[in-house]
Amino acid sequence: MDSTDVIFECSVDELLARTAAHTAEFGAGPHAALAAASAAALLAMAARFADWDDVRVGEVTAAGRRLRELADADGPAFEPLLEAWQLPADAPDREERIVRAARSACAVPVEVCRIGSRLAQVAQELFEGGKPDLAGDAATALYLADAAVASGAHTVRLNAGRPTTRRPLS
Image (tube, rainbow, N blue to C red; front, side, top):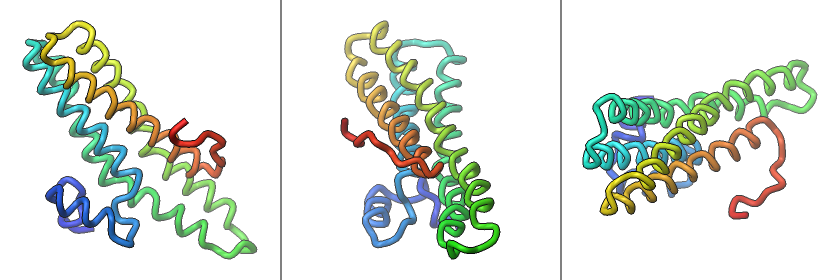
């Protein structure tokens, strides 16, 4: 993957066009990380306006940097699982390859869930204790982080081969 394929190197227009194209280039995984990274950016901005200390702001900023890495890592982590699923049903090592690839494919969305969950806690704290004029930013960060966690958890269930009985919007 060259630098033109990195999700954060695209303009918004290019990202949306490439997402809408008939490819799997920027699917659910990168977009879950993007949602959480957007939450982190909003929280960093709002935390600065709320006069939070540099350590707290730095934690949120570091989370955003890690989420950028995860957005780019999702595709390469998922590719071996896609390949394993496409093996003939009677291939001798098919099940073993699927299990091994599923573990790797789940690692990225699990980390997105972990970071997104922490960001949601920070957003809630900022919403409850921050300046009233930052409530919209904190609420939006909370919704973005929650969406990232829900999407990541759904992706883990799918990658692990467990059908989901819960509809995404329920």
